[in-house]
Length: 135
Image 1 (cartoon, rainbow, N blue to C red):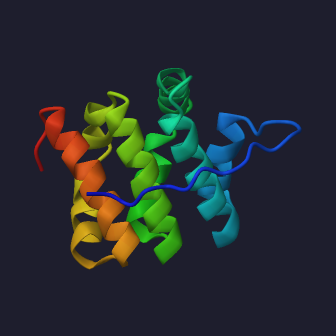
Image 2: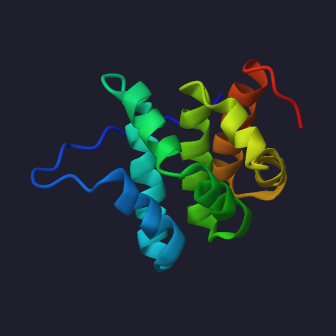
């Protein structure tokens, strides 16, 4: 039903903070926005500490920037924002996405985005729907 994300080898060194990744989604060039959105999604999807990472993303104010990226970002930015929002929904934060007006951009992306973006948006919408929220 959704695009399988390929496992990436772990990098050594300092881990970028959640707050810094959110700043990159908001303030930087397209390549950094895309990479930051993907990393936020990866953290939310992590089986070992995904719940904690989801909570940290929400507490740091990360939902609105991801929704904005899904609405107005580049094609790849929209795709990875949808991925991150889907993983946050799967982590139990559907209501936060709904409250941030995230459903509309995801519906639009599911209709008219690139192939992978459509699949991630549909995944996010399915998780939001499973949480009991509608558009």
